[in-house]
Image (cartoon, rainbow, N blue to C red):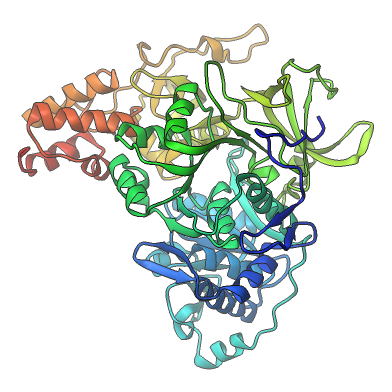
Length: 624
């Protein structure tokens, strides 16, 4: 599929970006984000650039902080080709941290501090990280066998080594460090995604691909100098880079939402209004959470990605936003590969758009030959945004990043595993996965990785993890089917706690079902299509003991009604049973109305286990 010509509903095909204040183009070929930021820092050092968590930084603040980080890394021996872990949550320090690593010549590796220690260690080992950049609050969570540089500490105290803090002589030497040139072909970052073998894989992205990924979206959404971008995306996922760098390079301002605001509709609603944001990108789940909280504000631009956009959501956003865009792109092809400006919506699915400029999308059949327009095939994506491959995984890289037979001049393509078709107007419509990879709440997950962790439990003989619809839960949820080892018994709570120590929260299944015998196909494989319904399966494993106190029993009745899940134990976790933001608000409303207690969504987030929430309710004042 060739590039789609520009039209009122399609992105322009120009390969340059003109800044709002200048007629000079910003070509991405041969440029890096480091180069582009240097120009911005020279032109407007005093412009307010980012704020969040009580911290505000100008462009000049970011410039100085990133220069200091780069110098400290260089003094620690970090340079071209190295990887540096950035262990930080959503914070105003993030742009400086990422720029500092890139200015040193190294590639940044975002590591979510909420990940289990085992997973963080595996990522650092796989990435061969030479150093870590982090915040003071996460010092206890990082590996001190590598140099550690703090974002929120002055230079004299900022860098730590296995032997203790640097001396003033060391710091002086760092400030004189000569930084290497940052070339377009060098690696800018490695972003880790779920791996089917139980091992996460790091997608390597070059500086040229990174610059293209940011600037091509700027050419599409036409950023304004007074735009305020509200960032709600985890730094461990590449759409967050659009939040951080597109406004930074186009004279916008970034407001970064803290973790506690992103998961609560009322808090995010208040921040969206209070910050006077004009632009936000989020998953459909986050947009629905805002709408359920009664958000009726106005945004200049809404970006939606990560999951399927349904017509009802598209219509609701269209009523509240000047522009609504539905975007799509795997991490392996740098942020987004397609984007569709959503117009009037009737019914049916919302397209993800034509390919973005400098992006080549082909829809191919099993024989790797093009399918006819309107037929469903697998999406292969080529162009400047295609990543360098998976870090240290030559076999997997060779399997997923390929040239097309008979068309080597087109360069390498990434085989996405996503199914889609091209409509008559050239836009692309998605139809799920060609393999077993799934998206849950916007996160790409390989069920095989969860299965491998389940098999590490001594009480599990075999396991299968599949996406299923659960009563009372919006969208798909992960369900773990397990067969106990040697006829033993399995505690669902113990099993989920075991996984929570090894996997991110979004990868922990919402339900566990015990099976005595696996249903089989004719070829003696497990027949996943014949696995029992998790809501009615007799082997559904109870997670714990029955509610005991009057508050626990009353609360359990509300949980069972809202979640449509029975029975509920005192050890059950609301979110592990399929609860989400919309159901959280329903539950809190019923607690306030039927139990007469002034509970909040924050209470549920802080105490998601029934027994803990009941205890908190016992000490909460009555509803006014």
